[in-house]
Length: 272
Image (tube, rainbow, N blue to C red; front, side, top):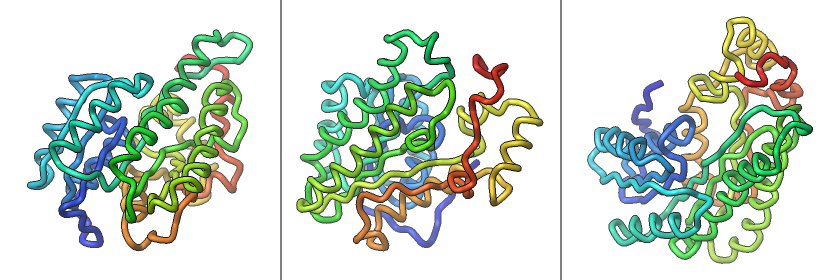
């Protein structure tokens, strides 16, 4: 789905750094901030994806676009990217941490290394991004946003690693909101539900029957779009949310209150 300029938002002159901003929900967030006037920097592991994302961002308005490849599990690469973005464009106003890794696997068959990999990307990576961005955002108006997931509160089969990582992320959001609030930084989370066009939906609900079942379990009876998460990220970064911190907000069409979608119910999709 194409992200377009929204007259309700104006981020002209503001700087936004998006970890994981080269695909899916995070790319949609990066593009939304850019098309609405912000200078945007993206960071992910693939140099090719970074280059492609920067080229696309350059076509979405006159503000500069920045990109650097690195791994959120390696603090030195995160620090290098944040430092380069800051040196090129000045103080950072918004930091979005969305890098994630996931796959379906029964806990009894999951290797310790596989478990540690998801914890490393999701939980440790989130801490690395936020901690290393702190010096560049520690002032009134600084906004940090983490992309969490429904697994943070709902036990889901074949998702032991993701459930543990996302639960940790939600608590991290709350602790950092406590510690960093006095400096003016607001720390919030977004919990996407079924968002069309994302890798998770495409892999886990890859048949018409599976998608139909997913929609039937969603109270609003539709899947969301990339713009829904992007809009929430932008709202959380404006004065409309100047008194909002530690919030972990579902953008899910009501799936959380409806009990969510059981990603592990169909064993045949374990290796989808």
